[in-house]
Length: 162
Image (tube, rainbow, N blue to C red):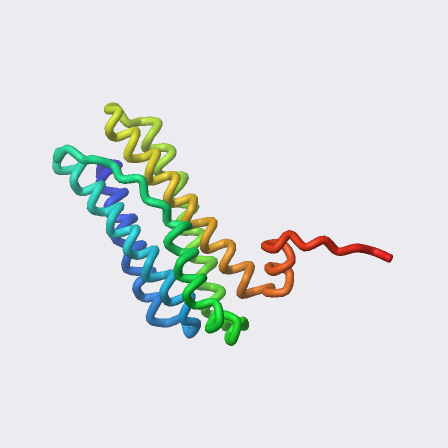
């Protein structure tokens, strides 16, 4: 199996996992997040498929973090009503982080073996987006598992001693 075939399989697996996770999480923000990341992975799959088929590809500059911030901003009040996540939801985010880390490592290795500049540019883009996905999942996991400290760090609060 070639690197492109492996990458295509990885993206298909990610799409399936994130869609399934979206149906299982109770928290509406988590659901929308998984669906948004699944959509990113579909776009990755399309890019990989085009390269695999030899079709000329224009790589778009997409920012997954910006898309997720929009989800958080539009659902902030709902998010604050349900800050406790179940063990299953937290586990889904841990699995998602692991999958994204595996993807990053694979794309870094594949980029180092790529021949054309077009392929290297594609893998650079995939590495960047998968890292953003990882960061999104890690931040969400931290938020759901330790909301109080999440607010302290996200707001850069300073705790003063007396």
